Image 1 (tube, rainbow, N blue to C red):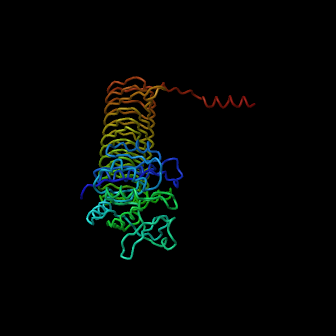
Image 2: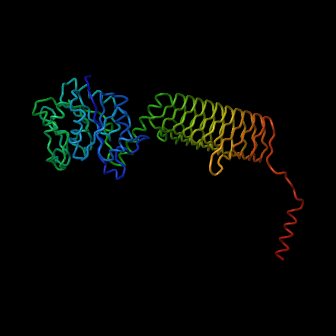
Image 3: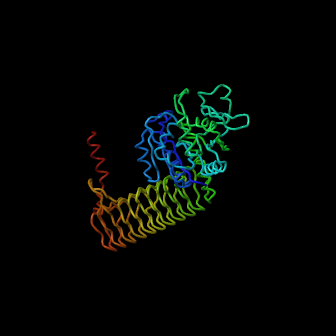
Length: 465
């Protein structure tokens, strides 16, 4: 292919979204809507230049996309699609190749369709090519008007169309290939004498026909691929379609899902073969899951790295954490950010871990809180153990060396260090370092008062009398 560039139109507010947030920044399967068009260009299409037209909340969009490969152009007044593309002349006016024009609210379009369209356009020697589609219900779309020989004569917007023209089911998708020199010359001839008082980009077709230049159409088979998002309902439909693409791809790569429709996987996640995802799981961000894992049901994992053969059991939440091979987490566990479980470690029922390293083979099976801790290998954390890491002003570290046994219902008041092989008696409050292989007992001596209950009952009866 000869040189080509991409323009992405993202200047509109999106009034029908009924939101204070500009439409193209609305979240869609874990990413901003505009991310789909931008990433498609930068990572797959890789044209010579990517230009994004911004308008409403221009600064917010610029800040959201700091990649230096993007050139932003601002459309200060939103006067239609023709006017939007015209403002890019300042950066593409000297460009001599093909320009592909996309919309920032069409996230389902694929690289394959766009590359085939550009190749077709250039192979036909066309000045302009429209991507079109046939819809059973064309309401809301500009209709493609063809001549007797089947050539594209014009596109008429719905509000300007006659009753007969509105019955046409071939519609314009808003995606174009245009030769740059022709584009900017033709935009100078576009007028705003229509129902909306706007400058319509498809009106450059008339200029091409006057100059006897080729105007072609490139049909796309699947209407859903060119679905534009204008409402919250359409946003939800697009999210389901994108989610299904991700699930299908994941299963193709060797992952099993018992109930695929109930599983939410963001496209930035990666899952290796022979892993099973049980129902109602949520995998978000840059999560990576290794081979042969068992995830869920009802687990949520965000921005975490999971090794091979890991089990994440029922109702477990993991955020920004690292789990080594053969570890077990859950059920009802919570790994908060910056937690690291070593190989074969076990974090069980109602255990919360935060900003801690848990060594290989270490177990905390029940009802414990581990925060700001460095725990060695083969440690046993008894039920009800708490690392008291916060003094009201500062966080402090707890260090537990290898093969320590911590009895149930123990409070470890940081900063404190338990030496290798030490044993902590159940019910202890530990405020001082414990030497290696020592027994630490941090509780008062038990005392039994004989007949205390009988005496209490006699006292109570006496008061009642």
